[in-house]
Length: 128
Image (cartoon, rainbow, N blue to C red; front, side, top):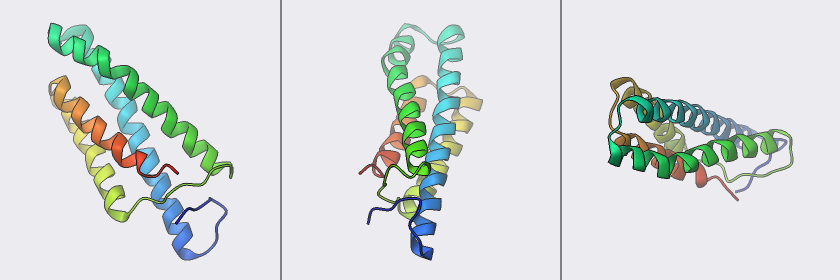
């Protein structure tokens, strides 16, 4: 099932709402993660962790920008999406909460990057 924001019917509207919720959760979590990794790299990271951050940070930034661009295209009625399942939305929200908690606890970059990658993979499943 592919949907556009203009599709009618309760099922399509719920699918669009789920997609928007997933996209906004992922975008926010990746933005916060990006900021925390930059801070961590500047003040706390050892050499190996700095290398890991430097290698993955461009991917996180690119994913965040892509999520925002695709959400804007969807809302502008110029793109269709594959609606996420309710499980994907729930998992994305949980990963966003985990990333917030990891950032607050100053977990190491490897754990943060792993959770961010899982979030990107869930979002990627909505691409057509």
